[in-house]
Length: 260
Image 1 (cartoon, rainbow, N blue to C red):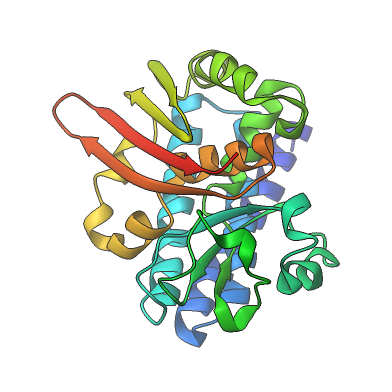
Image 2: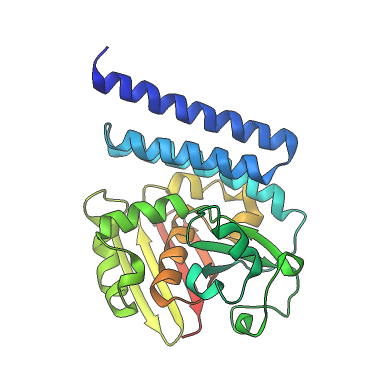
């Protein structure tokens, strides 16, 4: 067996373990197994991406995202209907006790918070010292893709400013891995609008009727990844206020709100 074949077998075994953990999470209704399973499947897919084609990566990433979204859907079904707020680690260190506890376990630097109360929003979240009593904290479904985009960028998103983000991101998404055919980003005060043409995750977007809560409150894999990136760039909370996917034009329209 060649070294490359051995590597593929090892990676496929990791993905298989992830799938088993995801199945277990469905039966046990466990967010822990869901997060572990999603991480194993997604990172296994990313490792495989080093070897096969872009289309294989799209298939694997879509399937992993679909299973993760299904598990998030179950969690959100018992939560409020509020929009998720993406919270960067540096901002959360002084505001979110739950984030401090998770940080010790080396979880990634962005959480998405689903408020329990309608009075908490991205506009006034800095007025609150949040805890698990105030809502649900989740690992963003786009965290894995966010790390891929950061690798494409060649430096941490926290090391660039908003102007650079707007200028650079179209190239990051369309060149190299070619996640999309074209990208247009427009900033108006504290609202960022992103239009993406023919992104490789579109097939999974068309299944959003199966995970309505996830897509409406947390976003799809691409909008979630962009929300993570934007939160790290501005170092403040971000929310996805609108997201649509046109089947005819194959354009994904996303709108992000934040307070500078």
